[in-house]
Length: 110
Image 1 (spheres, rainbow, N blue to C red):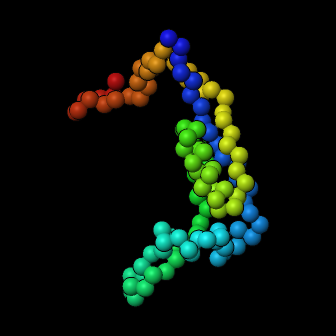
Image 2: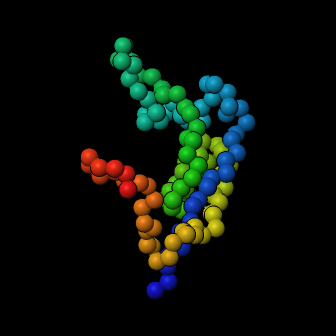
Image 3: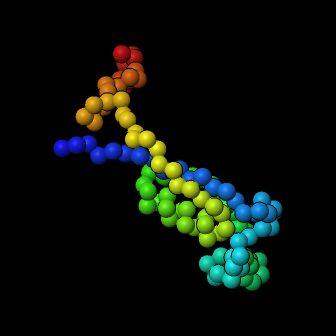
């Protein structure tokens, strides 16, 4: 049976103009109740600060596409890039012998 290829997915993001300003938020941010918190002192509702998500590497294409769609909904231009197949240095999934020196309880390093 052929081994399944493993890839990483990376997002290349171009932010909308002005989105680097301190109080910038995407259109409709304040209209969404999921973006509101309650002020602990007054109990009054207040909008959360917007910040761009910082994770850019994903282990699945599905997760990368979901995050790309979210960033696009905020006005960014996003490209999902796929890596070359990940090549592990070991054949058949075997693990190498331990390379660290282990100490036995009460004994010397071997």
